[in-house]
Image (cartoon, rainbow, N blue to C red; front, side, top):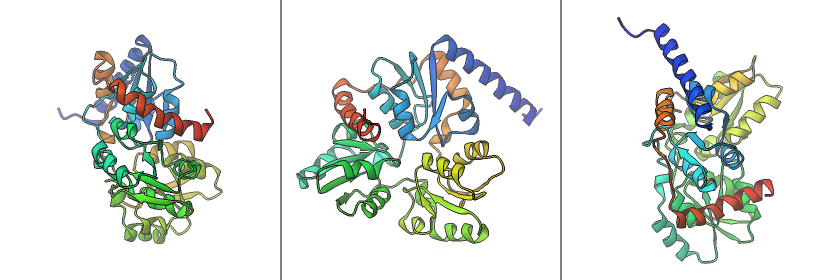
Length: 315
């Protein structure tokens, strides 16, 4: 008999119960990024963007952190919590953007601009964070860059986010790296314009990793956390969401009566979608796919993350 929806629902429910049981037995906490599958967001203790999860990782009271996201996120949690075991449900869940800059290439760029401060987007490896002065997320990139005394700022690896920061912090000279998010780059100006035409009453919210020509069409440019705040506070009932498709689940859940539309069918991060309930249960049960960062790299990378948190939260 083919595997139908009824059996699928029962299987998910059994896995959810197993994960909750394992979480209690092992004193574990589950963190999930906003781009994760709906059912993963449902079993998470904390859901948020990179900044929210980085902060949450420092405040949880648990022996195990099961990080439902991609490798650089789990690395950040491990860097900030050396006394906790950090697990990534799917070891292959990486980030093409993070792979576009290496510590060797960054050291070379820094040598060319010795007076510049180095800001790395949190979407980068532990080794790149270790070479940087401070990390940032899309939520606080402008604030972080403006806080630095240096006129010149090396910004890696996302060129679109860096270019947006340059527009908002014109007093700085941003030295860009030619990296990009493989998901956000797919949203074209034509698709965004068509979505606005199809939904004339909707506000268009775009992530700063989108192309500059797409951002020009946006009513608001903001991180995923910013999108939640904007949608909740706005008197408007319709929104076009220019970011990964996983956002719609929580937006609809937290804003009953409001409508949310994707401007493109291509806004899917394959790496984020690798995480399933089955992999979460397997990872927790066997405590596998632990993310560990060498102590030398961890200590240096922690300085960049600590400085980011200090600038943003004053601690």
